[in-house]
Image (cartoon, rainbow, N blue to C red; front, side):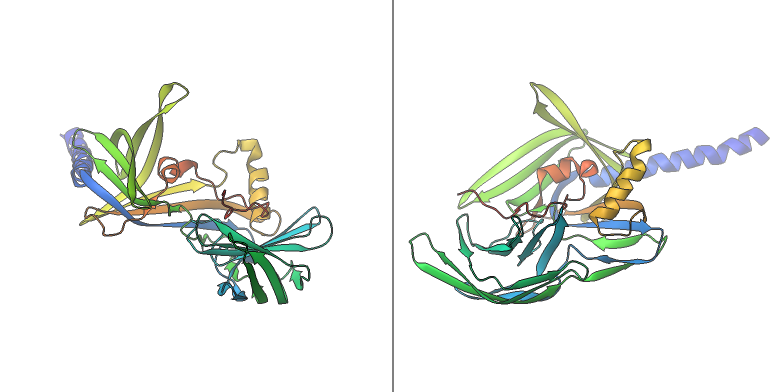
Amino acid sequence: MKRLLILLPLLFWISCDEDAEDNLTDELVGTWYLTDGELYMEMTTNSDQTMIDQFGPGIGSIEVEGTVNTSLAYMTLGEDHGAVSIMVANQYPFGPSIYPIYYLMVSSYGGDLSAVFYAVESEDYNYYFTESLDLSYDLDSYTVTMGSTEFFGTDMYGDSLSVTLSGTIQANSIAIPANTPTQVDFPDSFIDDDASGFIMTLEEDGSCVLTEVYEYDDETETETDVGTWSVNDDQLILLIEYEGYGETEVDTLEATVSVSGNTLSLITEENYCSEAEEDELDECLEEGSMEFGLDPGSLTNLVMVQIMNFSNTPPTLARAASRSSLKHLLQTKIPDRSHILYNPFQRTK
């Protein structure tokens, strides 16, 4: 009798757990439309310090007047082997490119500072040059100041263009208390502005269909991937098939899932050093400290969290996560910004 009394609570717990999985599976069956998403880091250090906010808008701006009138409020500033490189833009440079895009690129390669201002209002763009650059920077305070400087260019018809840039921009800072996971927000860098809709259909038989909808001018294109899905506790597991190297391969996505009414959220977490070998962990954390401007040796943990929100009601205007973000959430790394002369806004004519 005692043994039976011990077994009964265990059997009850197993039964409840299976019922919870069954209920979640039933709730997930259907068609879900991506509505929005969120991306942030949880950063832990072994000492109190202040981190430069490299992802949000700064304090102040570089103002642009003339053919173009705008404010450049986002900045990256870095030095590599004595060469300084600066980008100041009207939007986060490493997120989705949303027209119009305006940005200033400055470099000191060759010893002297040189600058180009770009105006990207469509797939075509105009660029402006100056021969009298009045610019100073301070790496310690992460500040860039530009005195009134005129830039000149020409449009596609050969007509002259000019803009005047001036102002001061300084990065914000984020307090990182010792031994306390601190949230550092990213912009919506995994939202793909080229896609106008993303649809995830989970069938009752365990199959799934992922559909991306693209709008080009007045034409609509779709890309579809198929696979299977299942639930394990509160985890949604997607196995997505694709053709690679002449045979069908499978990508796996595991995400914590929650359903409330007609909304669904997928949450994934990935350690910054998840792919490092045990003997490479310290080196990986040290690279992270350098990447984000932390004190050497102070970073003890860094986790990237991504949240994707869906609705079972078709939105009027849908935004979509890029296919790579959806299929490889667990493999996505924080953008490598160590060489900021890379031009994320550049267009090929």
